[in-house]
Amino acid sequence: MATKNKASLSVIFVTIFIDLMGFGILIPILPTFASKELGISDFGIGTIVAIFSFVQFIFNPMLGRLSDKIGRRPVILSTQLLTAASYIIFAFSNSFLLLFISRLIAGLGGSNIGVAQAYIADITTKEDRSKGMGVIGAAFGLGFVFGPVIGALLAHYGYHIAGFASALFTLSAFAFAYFRLPESIKEKKVHEKIRIKLFDLQLARQVLSNPSLGFLIILLFLIIFSIANIYGTFALLGYKYYHFTDQQTGMLFGITGLLGAVVQAGFIKTLSHKFGEKNVVLIGIVFMIFGLGLLPFGGNFAGVAFVISILAVGSGILQPIIPGMISKYAPENQQGATLGFSTSISALARVLGPLWGGFSYGFLGYQYPFVTGAFLTFITLIFAFFMLKSERSGVAQDV
Image 1 (tube, rainbow, N blue to C red):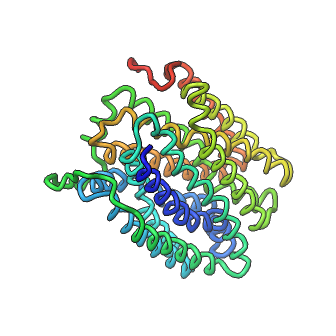
Image 2 (image 1 turned 90 degrees about the horizontal axis):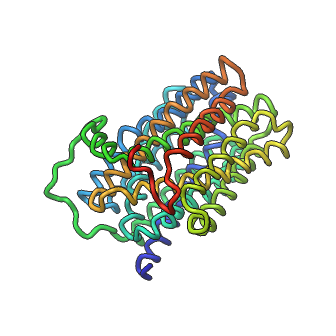
Image 3 (image 1 turned 60 degrees about the vertical axis):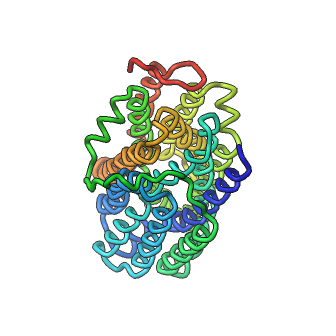
């Protein structure tokens, strides 16, 4: 990989890391804040978590196409400002409506992940694509190492302090990207009109008509849905069932982020070359099955820490490698649109997952978001075993 591209990878890593550290600050405290301070129901909390991803579902493909037209850099910068604004609104939230609005704006700002993935695709070869996507995964992971721990500590002084800190980190990421992040595409599609659609059916048909892309995107949806079952419910499980403090919950999220970052930054390329991408995906799914299924049965802090570590390894393997595989099958001149679409489908999974998680936690029992996630992941394992090819990087063409 060229030195210039390595430098760009480093800059996008730092940009996403600082941005995601701000995001990570709110992750362990948002459900408990909504429950303790605002008295919002478990299903209501699931709705607040889901609106973030619903907005991403709508805007990810749109921003992907926009970045193909005007460039990755202006989209990344503008969305960071929206994210910072959402955190400031969170700091002043004193009702369901205001908290809901803050998460809606945060979802719009967070619709830049597909653009960031397209940026990585622009500056890497197909051979290095999975490793490049691992940079985003590692930035996510490290953001989740430091962010939740900082958020849990700041929540001791007030939840609004955590909101302001998140905004400060995101504005720092904006400043860093503004001065250091170069544009990654040479030829912008300035002649093309941007189609403003809530959901681009034509793009969906175009992407899904490729059997390799279609299967990988379905696989990604099922995996993300299974993980998303616990987005709003794990903190509630710790608070209501295990009686963890915000600090303990933040520490558990920190453990998750650290392990995910280590796996994504240090082992993805090695594992893929040694065992082949199919086997690596299967290993990641197995880890997820045990991690999800055992979370409500950890018994105590040490037990839950061990189980969530298993889950972290599985998700750390899967979340960068599947987008990397998707990018290999996407046309080079449609990386932004294709990865934006796949990220949008991931966002849809993050909408449905928290809704199911909040509903099943509140009406069926605390175990159900985790057990049903494990069951669906097991179904995914069966599909992946038969549908993925055994070669080093391939998907069955006759899916």
